[in-house]
Image (cartoon, rainbow, N blue to C red; front, top):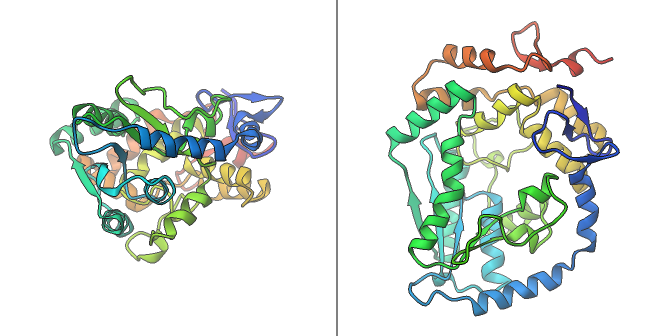
Length: 341
């Protein structure tokens, strides 16, 4: 197993599952240029008409959004209501809960989203025992700690939509296009059915982190910098995935298996979006990509009922020694960054 990086943005290739590149340039970078040839106005006009024509004849809601209260879900709601004229009383929000500690920013943003547009919201919480058992098993056996809840985050809204005859479910980006697994920026998510269409808002409005953040801030969205309960480490920003503390462990465990985590994902995306240089992104990756946020680790262990020693032993068991090595402080680091050729 060998780590290669995109020569334009620094995106990790080789160890990243499903990564694709052409002559050393990742497909995500190539897709950035493909965005320039998409008629976004035509897609936006199509969505306005589609919403107007698509109704739930057997229930009270025409559309659903799975929300965390994050910048993406806030920007989706704002645009649907203000740009595409979705009636607020025909829109249902669904929040899939986990058992980790919510951040103050996360609690504020979700409450602000509901109150700003006077929306109906359904909190769906699996039994705590089921969540803890599944999360603990997936962490200890496969180092895929949120396999259970992430599957539910994608599947449960579809089940709820079908149960209530809701014909449209909205999500954020098309991840296959944005992370360079496909060349097509498809509007409909692959798990759409004849009864329920899942629409990627990032295929209607050109997706970027900064765009979502700016739109969300217009309706009062706040970041971790606005509160003092979580000075997050091992992160590229203070405004993405800020809702649930223990949840962040899931992103970091990618580093142990593949040599990258969310810092790499976002830093390289910032290069493609023009807010960082490739050199700045590479420095951010060297400085932070290997760090597991201490508060996230503590919250994760407390929630599923293991000690931090058990956590560390499990990490060591799954560490990819082909590409990682422990430094003098006992932290797993990328060999190619600690010992550059």
